[in-house]
Length: 332
Image 1 (cartoon, helix red, strand yellow):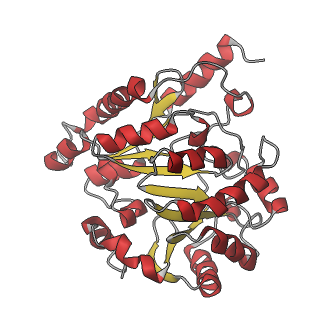
Image 2 (cartoon, rainbow, N blue to C red; image 1 turned 90 degrees about the vertical axis):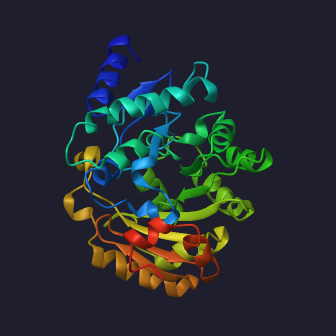
């Protein structure tokens, strides 16, 4: 039973971790890489796709509401993970500007920092990309298509990360002409058994629904399509051939092989040894690239991720992206 005390404790915990809650079920949080860029450091690996970290609004329209409890997740698994949202959902117009205002408030402390470039700080106050990925499963939000269209109408790009268990919502994005600029499908296991052990789904038929989304992915003809493998030693870092078969179904433009990072709440569930090294990731990526005939085009050591690209998609990566080449000089 969810008590008022439990809910308040959850909210307090999130706020202390840097979340700012907007409306009834949305939130924003400043990303580590946003802070890093403002202090003169590098952008995150999403700059491969033209995202400038200091201008990225990291948010969720479904705070804590998720249909999985992934073993490697760094987020808090509060009571909402097992209790579906039963209230009225806020419309995008009710939360959009408030998210930006909260982002600015969170950034305000950087203004007086002498190590922060004033130009970058000014740019950060005007985000031009919305990363719908902070927490929870965004496709549970019924007005996701409207949120994406609103962002595009404001001149922003969109970066949707999903566990792909809601194919009907993904299809709605196509039907309503609300395809995100970047569509990320997270693939956390090469087979049903590994999927269940790693993702710990809270719904029935999650593997079937994921595969339906993989078959739908090629229909996103207006999005940059990426399959993300979060690889955990001892769990899902195996059976490269099976991953290859699933990727061939989805036909993404890019594949990311990303190491699980031993951070946040995941430290309570997994040992540090479950975190692959960069060498582990490169070895896995090489095997996968041969099987799917994609080219390894870059490695980001800080995030322990390799980027594989379909040869025909390379132009799509760089033509409009001055950031990627600046921050990833190994990228072809």
